[in-house]
Every structure is written in C-alpha cells, then in structure tokens.
Amino acid sequence: MRNLLLTLSFLLIISFTRAQTATPNPRPLTLDEYNKALTYTIADLDKDTYVKFDNAYVLDRYENRKPYFITGGDGLKKRVDLYKLVAKQGMQEIGLMVFYTNETGKKYQALVPDFTADAKVWAKYFQDIDDINKVEKNFILKLSYVLSKEMAFQQYKVLNNGKDMKEEAATYGNDICFPGDEEVTMSNGAKKLIKDVKSGDEVITVDPATNKSSVIKVKELTVHAAKNYAITELVLVSAKEEHTAAGLNISLNTKVLKATPNHPMLTKQGNFKIGEVAVGQQVLCLNEQKGKYETYTVLRKTERAGGVQNVYNIEADGGSTLVLNGVMVMQK
Image 1 (cartoon, rainbow, N blue to C red):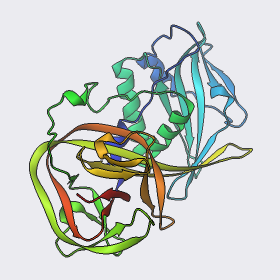
Image 2 (image 1 turned 90 degrees about the horizontal axis):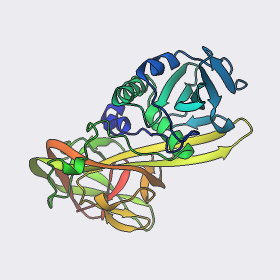
Image 3 (image 1 turned 90 degrees about the vertical axis):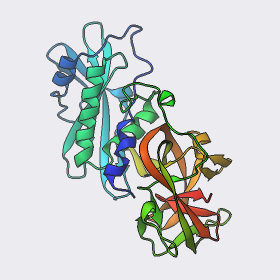
C-alpha cells in the first residue's frame, strides 16, 4: 500500500457535516467553543453516556451507539466512540465529539463541527485530524468510514478552498494514463513507481473472469508531456463487519487510485472510464494480507486539476489488465 503521505491528499478532503440536527435552527459552533470542548473528557467510555461540563455543555452518547472496533490491514484494533456536543441553552447540537482509542489505550479526540460553523472552525478541525493522522496511520479514513455509516454527509472542499474544481483549468484530453507516483505490482510481488518501470520489466496481469494472476512483460512505458491534467481519484474499501455484545467489529482494508478521467476500469457493473465510475461500484483489488484478489467498493470519488506533471501508461506484451496500487485496471 502506498505510503500514507502519498494518500494524504485523499484523506484530507474526507470530512462530513451533519445533515440533520435536533433543532430546526442550529447555531454555529464558535472557535472558542471548539477549543474549549476539546478539553472535555469522558472518564469511562463504557459507562458514561451523558456528561455535563461547565453547566453549559453536554456530551451525550450518539444515539446510544455502542463503540466501533476497527481492525485495519496492520492487524491493530482501534476503538471509536461518538458523542453529541450539545449547548444546554436551547439544547442545540453544535458538533460531534469523536473519542479514538488505539491498541495501547492511548486516546485521541476530534470534534466534527456542525455544518453551520464558519471556515475558521473547519480549518482548525482539518488541522487537528491531520495532526492525529500523522501519528495514527489512517485515522482519517477510519473516522470517515464511521461517520459515513452514521449520518448523511457532504464533501467539504478543504483542498480547493471551497471552489468547484470543474471550473479550474485542467486538461481533459485523450491521454489515458497515471501520475508517476502510482505503484505497479511486479512479478515478484514488489511495488514499483510507474514512472520507473522500464521495457522488459515483468508485471502482474489478472484474468477478470477467473481472478487468476500471471506474469507479462512491459513492451514500452509511454510518457505524456507535462500538463495540468485532470485527475480522478478513487478510494476503495473492503469492510467486514461483525456485531458483538461489546460493539461493532470492523475489518477495514483500503486502496487509493489516481488516473486521468478517461482511463478504462472494469467494475462488477461493467466497463467504465474511471471518471464515470460511481460511488458504490465494485472493483477487483489485491488484499495483500491474504494474497487474494477481492471485490472492493468505491467509497469516495473526487476529481481535480492535478498540477503540471508527466503522466504515464504501460504497454505490455499480453493480458488485458494491470495492478496499480493494488487495484485492477484495464490496459489502454
């Protein structure tokens, strides 16, 4: 799986705002309240479901939900508990507190603002979850998965300052290719940046009908001139859930893939350009822990100008697919 730093662009734009609140006219969470609320703690996450602070705020366990226990590809189990942050005056919900406990018992917390909060509050929230993400690998992804199960959401456009990236000057051409930092699965199971692949290298191809892999040779690496290409990014997840008396156990594996919007992808629903693939569609991916190809589901799709860069495509001697970032893609 790619280094976390290479997937951070995806992780930072995954956040959610509340679609419904208990009151018809929710008020914004202020920055002072945000900072103050982060000092509030729950002594016993198993027993304390309704805790008052400063005679002005309440942390109320979200829908009386049991905790989530999420095990990622590293085999480490994390715990996630959700609490509503309620202002006692008017009993208005102004945020959602997240308590995250790692495998050693160390606790982190984040406060998801109500959707009415202003840009400064959201900026602080994104900085806070980014800071946690730097020490707790894939924290933001796990947080996003939990929030997507619990509430309706909308994508917060943090990386583009709220602008619609469709309006940005990006090249939508006929080049079908990948940014240079996408990783190709080689015949020995190693990963190699596509920009470093050479003629004669042996790579993996997968038969979509049987899920069986075989080895093919690279004939040529095509390099397209540096432009500000439009880039589509897919985030795919495989999540196995098990309800227990203690809470919901989740085994979560993820893939992130970037390509120009017109690169072909074979999904369970048919053959699409990556720019046409929809959230919820299913794609064959490699589960490195099991060494098997499995169906992953598209959790998130974004498209933006990728900045001026070369993009690359592999021409291979045989096969119809390649494996990039653990995701099966069609050859050009």
